[in-house]
Length: 245
Figure 1: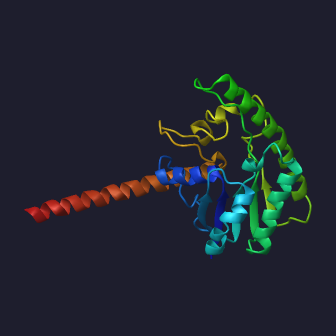
Figure 2 (figure 1 turned 45 degrees about the vertical axis):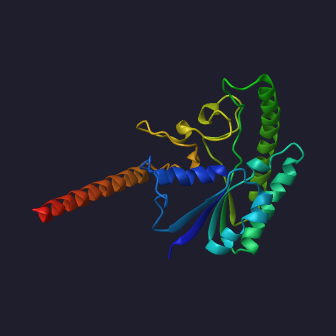
Figure 3 (figure 1 turned 60 degrees about the horizontal axis):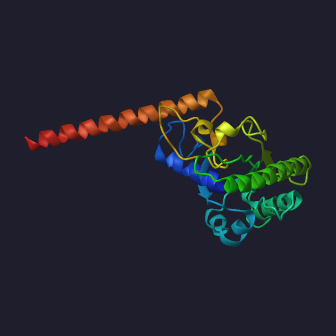
């Protein structure tokens, strides 16, 4: 029986689901090509942090009872008045709630992504300075949070939690900015790998299938499905014409 997986988190999760539903990239399906082994659902809220998730959105876990959770949280918890240690503790405590109270068997905890300076012609010097101050703070703390989480995962205490590091989104002040939109927070079309001129909102590029054979198989499946729909449409049109004679 397929395992039920819930992809849970902030705006990256939300835009991932919307991008898949838009069908502008034939490499994506809501099943992520894993329908034989897992049923997958999404729950993403823009601006979500761990405290809001605990206080307002736990009903989704009671309703869906997932066996596996892919967790994208932490970025919105990074603030000036909160230490990296406290943020990491919040995330780990939430993971403990998932495993103990909601009986989640496996958690894929995704790293905090970097955030870069805003750019745009409409930005005033004050907005630029405020954004720079915040992003410098975020950069230092988020990197520290990732280090703490990775260290905690290396022991036996969190044996059912895997810390996922995205190879394309390492903390680098020079390389990587071109993968983010003007706000420096959300991923752009280049990060996603959009093709054929399709435009889309920023989503989680870390979910792109890295196996070329799997990607090719998904493209072929999508192509065959489109051909089948066209044949059915042609057949119905032909039947309607015959009935009008």
